[in-house]
Image (cartoon, rainbow, N blue to C red; front, side, top):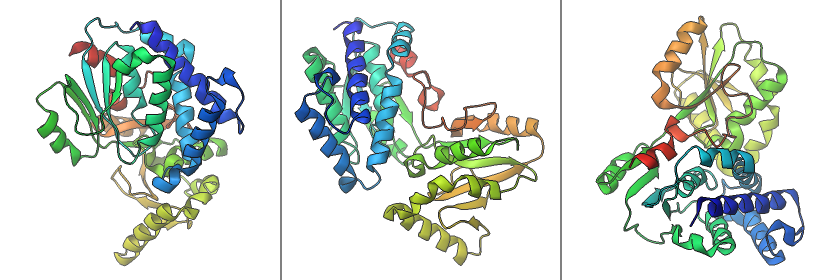
Length: 347
């Protein structure tokens, strides 16, 4: 199977998803989907939260828009031209996380675009959407069935592994997959650096960086570095778009639990009945909580951030990722800063 054929499948996927997120009704065959396929996927998205309450329709659509962004024709072709297409494909086992809908899509894209074979082990928390998209890809090009497979049980017959999970999962990954070339990804956190000149619009976008997908992604901002004297009320005032979060029962349960813990232990915090701000030197805040820390000298802060690079996934701020873009990585933004395609070429 040639690289061009694989690229065309991803371009077709973008076309189908773009038609889906832009229309309430089937737009016609030009979408690449039959009316039955369109309506079936619509029912799946509408009911996904019944299986995984975190996967609301809004969050599923956000995830699909992320895939649309990654598969833009010009950037996809430019990206693929940067890496050789192997003539001796290896089977790469992909152990996918389930915190966000199809969060392992970029890894899948990298494996296929370099000419390798993907053997996907889907998370029990996120299987329906990936399975449906892979089913479409197989329909559009049946040759892809040999390159892209889903393992229903324990994965077997693989040459390398890319696995994403919690810090506690790493020991298990080492036990089961340490004997082959591997790329293991554990928990990372993301931070924002404010300089005090941020507009209200930028702070509102920061609210999305913090709470898109309920704040469950490693690219969600969980820690704010603020210049001394920064008015914390600006955070609460410009995060009003996040008020809907508390209506979600699982998020609300996390909020109630963490608030109770703070109160019982007499831990100081600020609260607006939707989320809490807590002054803390840590960077990985619990769900519904944002840590903050004041800084005096920007140079010292930048040095500190450099020292923490192995713990960070994304940094948002005027000199970093633009506000509102934390959960919209480009195709060249690799998880953990490791070039997945280069790594695949090296094994």
